[in-house]
Image 1 (cartoon, rainbow, N blue to C red):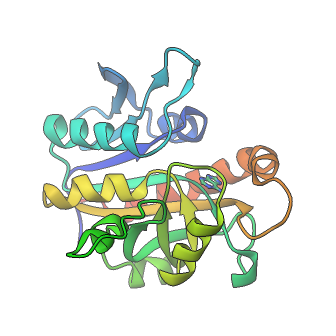
Image 2 (tube, rainbow, N blue to C red; image 1 turned 180 degrees about the vertical axis):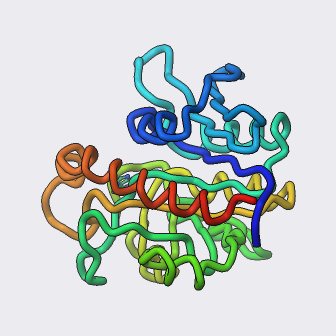
Length: 233
Ligand code: ADE
């Protein structure tokens, strides 16, 4: 399947700059707090969650990701959204730092615990649709995995239990929110996540994240370009 208009939705500017440069994207609009970049005919959009004015850092997490995706769909009508970013993974699953995963099967949440009867528990997990990634993974040497989203960078015991139950491979902070807005609007969705740290290691994941961010961003850029060039009409 090839797409006319692809939008890349990202949280961190540092991770997006190599892509903006590669495609020579221009800043086209600011929809508070979202900053949108595009190519000449707006067939390729890259949209950032924007900055927190108070803390002077990138907006990360599910609330900014949902607003970003809503704006991108309303204003630019993409037929595919790709969420790119960094993520944690599990050493016990034989994952390596720098591995790049593409979303497989579904995207879910691990911190929306709603233990009520009548569908609320399943509603909390989300389980949103992603496009089939079998051919893409093989072609571009990507790992396939179930991606799970939460608004905490660390992983508490209950989060870990839910991730185990849902057979999660990749832990990050945006994909499920984006996939939800895509599903609401019938827009195809996939995600590419490069691994910067391990969730099941005893030391601080934040330190590993910062150490590996630069190298991981370069790898993410290369794989995103391969994917976009392959999927775009
Ligand atoms: N992004 C990079 N590493 C992460 C982690 N361990 N959890 C959530 N988001 C991340």
